[in-house]
Image 1 (tube, helix red, strand yellow):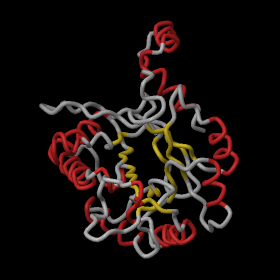
Image 2 (image 1 turned 90 degrees about the vertical axis):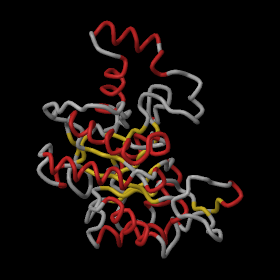
Image 3 (image 1 turned 180 degrees about the vertical axis):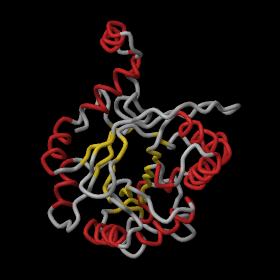
Image 4 (image 1 turned 60 degrees about the horizontal axis):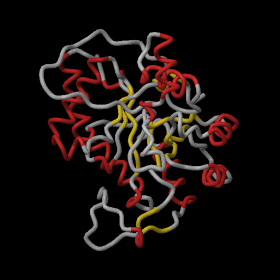
Length: 280
């Protein structure tokens, strides 16, 4: 999966949908290989609900059918509004034409809080199910008095080890109830993933992690391939706040030369090599 950047607001032009190849997961319906991410919803903070809705509508108009969000992004309601508007406009025929991923925030990564968290997500989206529900990080945030479950403010002293078995059992229950057609994880390295697999009755269908030319994730990719887990790439064009943030992926001389030789953009080369081909 590639997280897309939101376009500027203004008049939208509907284009013919581009057919994006899909990949079969161990459960749930096939997942489009390229998706539109709403994490830049800091979008939500910068432009508000209407700005996120407009950005997602632009993505749907352009042909995106995989829409990625999370409780902590504060973009679920806006994404749901965009899907509803796209249905009314006839851009898509029904909710089933889009693939929606959301994530369990660490404040709710505790036994007894997983199902209510997903129900809140579905209420925000105004949908009966998500196609893929992920544990956002392999840690939990210690509940504190007055804390908002979706708060993006994480104080390190309040991070605690996750009761992974208890949390995963509730993720499996969400799957059994049909509220999440597939379940998985995000930001899980090999050790955490192997621990989860040691007791999971329903193995994770996907692991969403940072993948780009400066963060290849070779060992993790091989483990996921061996275990039948789809590796999903976020920030394939580079990310902020990571060890690679000071190195611009898009400015790579090697990638620029490859793009020039093939008459493509650097972004097209990265998506092709590190998302479409290398994540499987």
